Length: 346
Image (cartoon, rainbow, N blue to C red; front, side, top):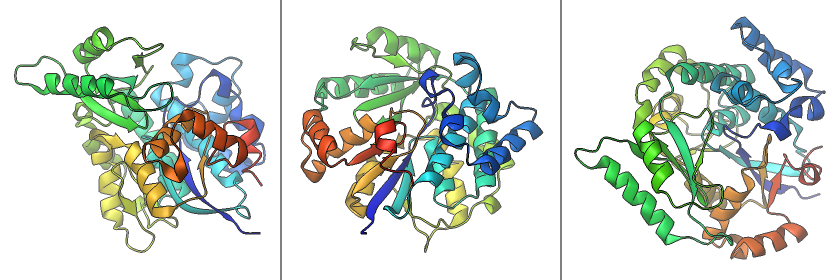
């Protein structure tokens, strides 16, 4: 049997919500050793084990989406999903991720061991819980058929420029380029401005609960704190090529682990994370047959598809064309969706 070439996409924060409660228990009862390792790390820090968070009686926005809880919980779900992929069906040619998903990509790709990946994610979750500043707002820059809306993009760029002008009393920055969505990071005044001035579009502008202004200069104080706690010695050359938030590739043959550490705990924290560019590079450089999106959650499918449509990849021209293709020969398989999950797991 010829294996399909697959690019793996790791999720970021905000992907474990009420619908995902029990995800670990439902899908990964056979990965007790891995989950126990993450739990032990948490317990050593006096924190609630991820297995206990996962089987809580009810979902709590404050508890389950806090930085120090959400990050390791998503890490455990996503890495367990990665381990469940049927390697006889899929040849994994590259790994990328969105925002916090970069830490997961490092672990899935072998640049970090499972233990070191869990330590990095948990440590960064604690740092962000204590040191996070500002917030994030999500706004679409595509229409219902996932075609670009120039007016929305222009308004966002103008808002960023206004905040950067001399004498401005607010901060607004491009945080994540996420397919057809733009994630903006801002301080309190910037968040208020965006909430009042961005044109209403259904549920948008959407403020993300318990999210700081990650990937912006508002967190420029965080890299020294992270680098003090997490040294370069924990990094290794990846076993699988990695694509970061600038679209750069980290190869198993040429990666400088000191530089990888420097990016991960430096520019990755306080400069724009270009997930769109990462997907473009993945598509053009690796020509995968399929993108496999690790769980939990199902929110990453649209941004990946929107970026592929932007480049007319495999003839995709819009949302309707994408849905038609998905029904016959899927280009994207989301492990957070039961019907697609069955096509991925061994």
